[in-house]
Length: 133
Image (cartoon, helix red, strand yellow):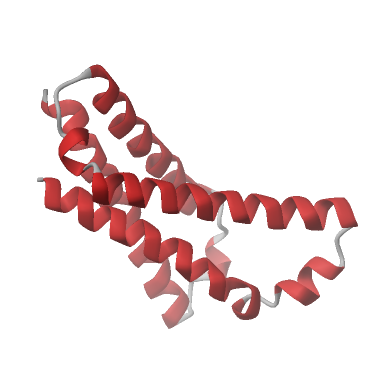
């Protein structure tokens, strides 16, 4: 089971690294130019902190997978909290992003469902230690 947590950690760090491609892929320079300075800076700061959380979750999972599996209140709280984080992300994927962004578009549809699968997998991996004991 600990290897699943470590794999989840690697995936979360990969997601953080993937964010480095977002500015070019989604034309952030042009898109954010229309925002006020404050909103543009909030956008970039929030993106930075999302990446930071992903890296921290990843490092925690890679280096402390055994500890996350312990039947103790702190490990259950941490793994349960990470699971809730990914549950919220899954709900956003399902109910916030408009289906017109992916329906009828092969690549976008594949990515949409791949992320649903990834979020669900991360929920399951981190929920297992929480409910196991």
